[in-house]
Length: 134
Image (cartoon, rainbow, N blue to C red; front, top):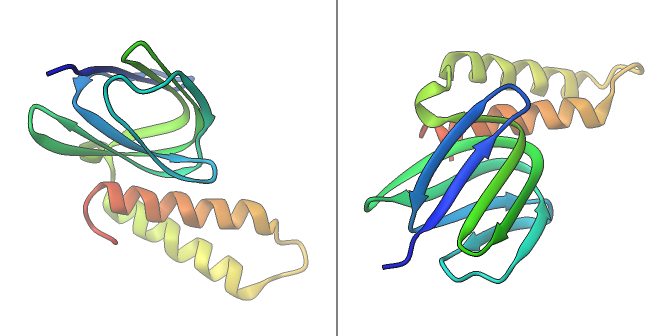
């Protein structure tokens, strides 16, 4: 069976380099599936969970922003941030979600709404990748 070579990097580190059977990524306008022999593609990434199958098991990773390129069964994800499920501090993500919800609820005049909304989405994605929240 043909596999995809997936590499995930952030400005800080190389997060992952692995052969996978398939993956689903949070593209900017919705989730996108990638299988072997996929047409060449470059897309923006949104905030969400990358789900990938490797050696028959499903793994998850939280990402926020960046780009993905697919070419010749090679998938390159250049993300602003990326954390594998086992790296996520769930309690910290829960606290971040609470803070973001509180900021959005108060709606103070100096609130940067877009920034607060992105913080909420990141916190939820991190929990989903860790298997805590759906």
